[in-house]
Image 1 (cartoon, rainbow, N blue to C red):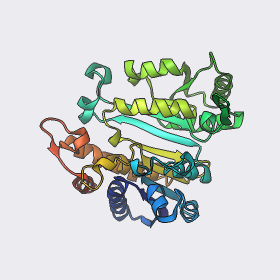
Image 2 (cartoon, rainbow, N blue to C red):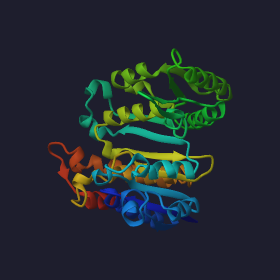
Image 3 (cartoon, rainbow, N blue to C red):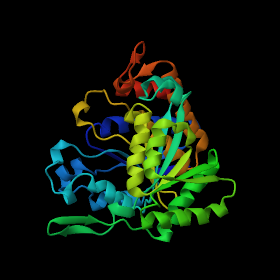
Image 4 (tube, helix red, strand yellow):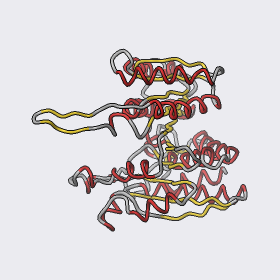
Length: 352
């Protein structure tokens, strides 16, 4: 079968890590008999330099006509002085809105081989960690009415029943495929929008009697993530809370360079990208960790193409390479073998 994929390398280390992910994708195609048609397009800072805008219409059109999108990273100090509406990060918002992507999946996985990299004590981490944060992506305070009034400013947190129900349904479906345990995070003791959130999640839970559902205030959830992260399996929460908690969860794993993400809508089309940024300070030096982007490809295969066996093969290959002691600089520890971006990609392909 043929799958059409739009590839957006972006800025900084984006091109380097995306190159290795594409190589892995090609290796999977050869091994399992799939054809991946790749079309490279521009977005972010490089698009501003070329076209004067972060998200050219042509890029969005190619993405809409693809089966999935692979994104490297966007942004960098070079464009920090631009007005907010013209910054590279606007490409991300434009892609999410233009492609109808409302659910952001961010797994925080700590491989047992890397448990020493976590800032938490070994007795807290145990033999590893696997938490999935499901974040609502196109509503809430980031998209509500905002403005300034003389010497004050305001941003509005607003959610509809439909917005909450569709993200909660995604979380329930993921929980059904994992350990059937879901924690919904809100601030229902204070916020009216959170009270509606809790009502909708509670109502939807009746459709998923096998899933154990609980509710947790966001401040307690932030504390519990560092106190006892293994209590969590799937977390579902609003845009801003999810932004913060997923970053906290990612740091527990020891390196943001290890973590993938997926942004999904109602259909199969999704956008897959590493959690990390463009890291311009190490761009072009063969130092970046490509694993987050490579595992993002595994998420693409699983969630957009329903190729679970192929996704498992990538994740197993990554685990094998780590078990053999190979590390990029961000996850390096004593006694391990230091490798660069390209060699890490080659090692993972060899395991495949």
